[in-house]
Image (tube, rainbow, N blue to C red; front, side, top):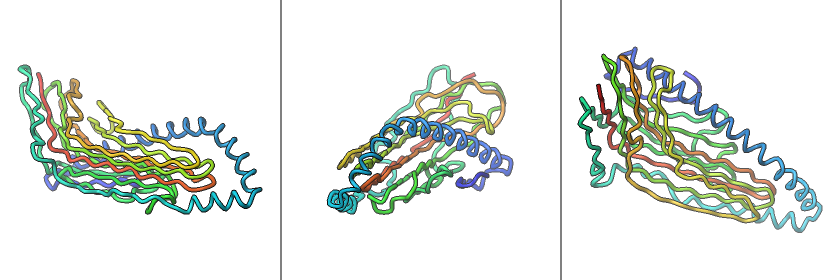
Length: 296
């Protein structure tokens, strides 16, 4: 199993099923890491011109002790992270999100907590999250922090994922549609103070359906992305809602055993420049149920 991946299994899973789960999570993590690396490379290219301008400004600023001292003072005032993981259960009425069965469905399989397995991992090129929690009951939370401008901020970027899943079996070719009602919330805070300082916060929901290491279906719901870069910038935001994600993701599958994953992710990264920067990206999601609609 690659570094940085943790998996927690139900005692009911056989050794062969655990191996299928391990293979699927390792493959999904590698795929996501490759996509994240490519995105950071693109961002680095876009930042080259900005960095060149900042380098010239930095040279001028360092030549003036008074300005340099003033910027250092600005950078020494970190902002306070005002939110933390709550990890509450689903709100009352969470099951009101009714998913009707189609007349063509031959069966509807409803999975309730605790699920077959839980997992978590972070990008091995970055730091682990400030705090995270997730169990087989589907109460998931990630608090990712980066930069000296926030308490507990890592010195590198943080890109963390956490989720739950179940084994799906079929003894004949069928079509499946996948649903997962969930209660979620997010909170973020970014601060960038000083010349060349920047901060980026992202997070969202994700799901995959796999056979061994092969991704058959996948989806992400980027909940927010906020980037700040200026002499003095701060931004905060939070929201919460009950939704269904995935909501009908599906396709035709052959006989065998598959893994259905539902999770969340958070990303935090910053550059202090001449000053300081900090980011907090917090995501929580309580997975109310996982449902598989089967059609012949």
